[in-house]
Image 1 (cartoon, rainbow, N blue to C red):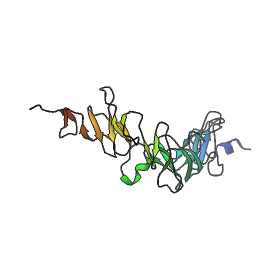
Image 2: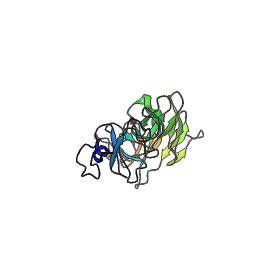
Image 3: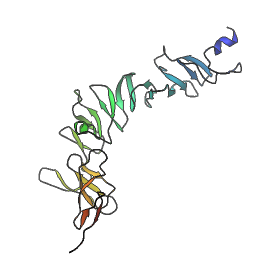
Length: 220
């Protein structure tokens, strides 16, 4: 083999010893610093760079995301293990696996009433219409993941009535998700689906001001 043949897929100079970058549709194997096709090999599909031993991918092409459990590239952000580039079978803890579509849905800030079942969900049902498995520490109630860890008072049916609010950490009672940590002192209830920073009720002796903060109420 002519020496230059080994470097035909390099994008830039190679000094007769190694590639610096690869052409489109090729990845650089850091073990031998040569470029190989990332279209034919399933393990390195859409990969552009391997680890130092050339055993797994560490960087994907633009618009592709690396799964840190299977080290494969897919089009799905938040995917840990993919069946193929368009279907995920395991997501990171910050994403919920929608079994119907194979997509990973961000499960921390929910901006839609119709998508509230994704909140703190690990995996949906087969139809993708409700949560089936919650993240650790959350309780599945009617297809929704509820946090009762910081609940300090419940009714006879187990529904939370009051959350921890001790001056160190404040948890507001959300009518859907249970006790949600909020960064507004003396807030006891909140109903905002987007970021849970909108207080709707303050502790006794406090009132909401125009900025949705709890301030001391005036004593007449």
